[in-house]
Image (cartoon, rainbow, N blue to C red; front, side):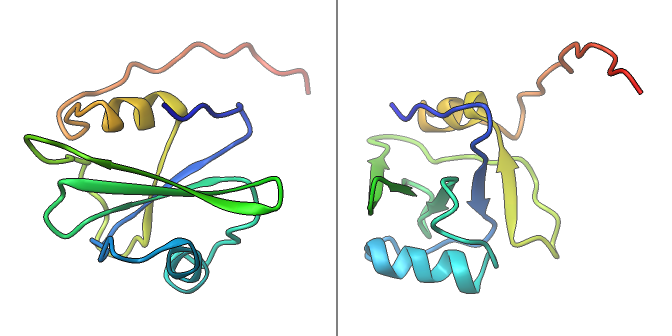
Length: 119
């Protein structure tokens, strides 16, 4: 399972992707489609056209890493994404749920408590 630090963001591409793409092809999609920097240390997830597979690309110590998972049964399910959006932002818990096969379109996370910040 992937682990992330608190400052790491997870971006899921809004459009399905041909999962035959490798490290360089996915990094090119991050730059061109998502308009983000693939070297920033964030995680970039791409779901295949049949929604049975997912690849997560990230930069680690001088090289790209691709994590690939294909569900034996079922499909990856995301919440509704705005039609003009290129990606959906998830946190580490939501990414773990997605990779675990949970349907994120029906699960709603309660808002967490945050302390008031000094002015």
